[in-house]
Image 1: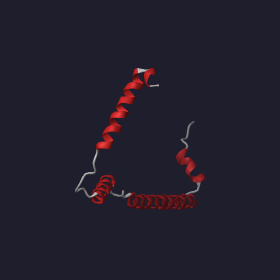
Image 2 (image 1 turned 45 degrees about the vertical axis):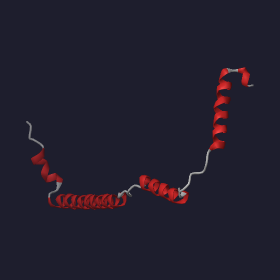
Image 3 (image 1 turned 30 degrees about the vertical axis):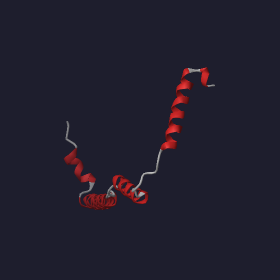
Length: 105
């Protein structure tokens, strides 16, 4: 299979070199793997940590604004109904016709 293509031969040579060199490696002395792993995890946590967003406080403000606006509209509509009904009681529509309709002859 190695002989079938030049790409396979190159791949085989690279793999063989890695295999041969791996046998020559030695464990590094004086390195605390556990400490290094803790340090790595700490730095990773530190790099990925973000401040929590304050959406909750803005939602309270928005909800309060909606309630205030809704109550204001409700009070305004009630006042307008009271004013309309009292205006109709004070000035009957029939008496306003002479002021509203011009006299055309």
